[in-house]
Amino acid sequence: MQTWFSRLVVATAILMGFTVWGCASGPAQGVPAGPAQVFAAADAAGYQLGAGDKLRVTTFGEPTLTGEFTVGGNGVVSLPLVGDVSAQGVTVSEFRDRFVTALKDGYLVDPRVSVEVLTYRPFYVLGEVNRPGEYPYTNSLTVQNAVATAGGFTYRANTRRVFIKHQNETTEREYPLTVGATVAPGDTVRIGERFF
Image (cartoon, rainbow, N blue to C red; front, side, top):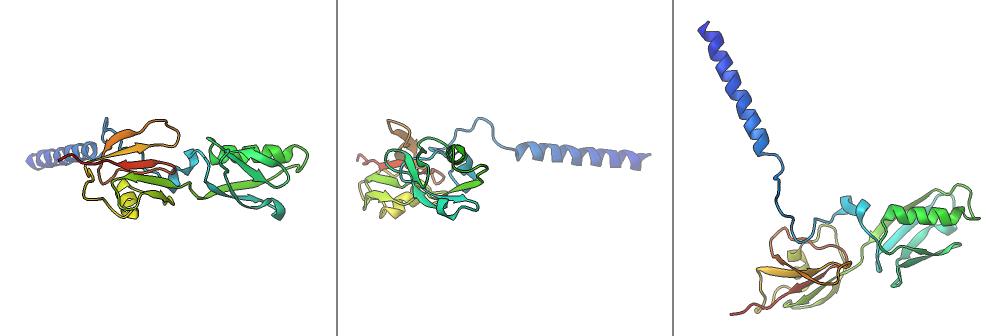
């Protein structure tokens, strides 16, 4: 009788331990996001196209409608046969649907098209860095990597905060400069000056 009771107590303690551990290891609720959500290839489904993005368009069975195209400054992509197709502010799948619709309008009966982003639009680094300017975007880019690309901080740089203006916004926002602070394509990153 006592052995059975001892086993029940031990099993209950183990079960409660797993329950507490599972709750503690779950995602934190209410934790504010960093300056920008991590932008990686996995996020490309929700990525909105803009000027400077380079696309690979493949129209199956139609080599003359396949190639690499860049979103122009006016937000359109000039494609063979159909002409200009608007890409500004739409996702890759929305752009593909627009191209398919244009092809169906008197050109192809059942076009099969795939579109992927080859290179994202550049980002910009300003302020207290050694080489401010425009740089090509790479996946999962952090502010620290962006600053390193721009030659590192100057001796006057404020290394505790960063100002970021996203391409679709009109004003920059201030964020703490943490290791996980990320940069999205088209962002303007500004490192301010520290005050002594």
